[in-house]
Image 1 (cartoon, rainbow, N blue to C red):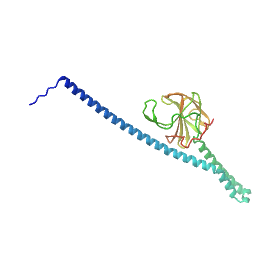
Image 2: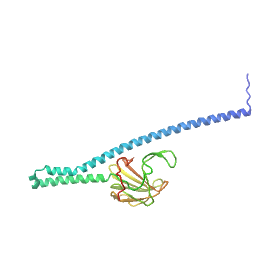
Image 3: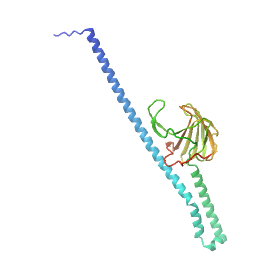
Length: 252
């Protein structure tokens, strides 16, 4: 039979070592769980970016097709008229046929022009973009986050213009977004304007491209005065700079 005698000093060392091992184990477990959470977040951000690229590709194809159709309208009209025999062009029946075709083509042209005018291909405000669409470090937490719009610094009160024809879907105020306006352009396209100092339109208003809809500001959760501008297709934020925006200043 053996007898083990430990001094109080040894017991304290053993207890301290045990606490240290438990602390190290807890730290390693926490670090593992944190890395796993970060990996999941990055995977979700990649999926959002992929969906955004697909939505942008669809929007670009729609815009190109509409522009091609509109460009070919005059050629179609001239071709139809030129294809008729000269005697039919001056006859009563031929005149009616041409008028009917002209009305149909004019209606098509009007619809195409309406669709093209509702695609936001210009910026709503002048200014340098300081933060784009994509993953960035949050200015509040320092952690990666998905930024869903374009930030354009401007003095409070700078006019904000509609980049396309549309319907004012909402005018609201929230703690994070501040004063906010949302335009619905049809075809699943909406644009959002955040941190405004003032809205110059109300819900239900129809606006034309180049019409002032608000003034930029510093409301909500911001670090400085700027306009946060978003373009969404079927609810998914896209980066309009990728072949959608025309170069130049906003219409005014």
